[in-house]
Image (tube, rainbow, N blue to C red):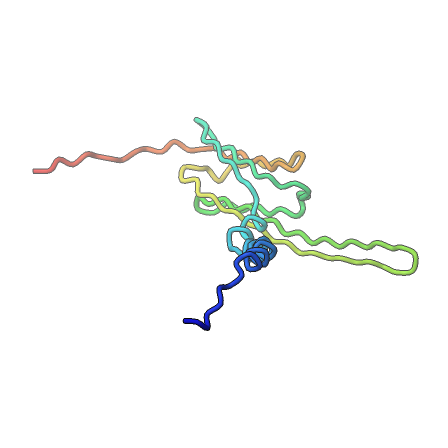
Length: 144
């Protein structure tokens, strides 16, 4: 017991405080939720009486980079972007390129495939999907 020396807690605290923020930042970067948030886009769905109105926020996306598909009640919005920036300065050329692919699907059980309309305005993609009247074929069963 005589050979034990107490650890200098103050120095340890200074080291931990200095690097804790850095380690937390690195952990946040590789966290799945962080990566998923960067590779997706916000979608709002309104269920009106005769139609669904879907709004997708796609800032900076051109309409030729968007693909819409509707199959068996599932609407899929896909975006594929490729950006290349060439910047010439004094005696060097700076070039960056980036590829991005995002996709969201929503299921609309009583949607009609005919008459779907889409419009892109100021980074908001608005899709109007007409609804068909569903005949509810439900019967309550009494238990004996």
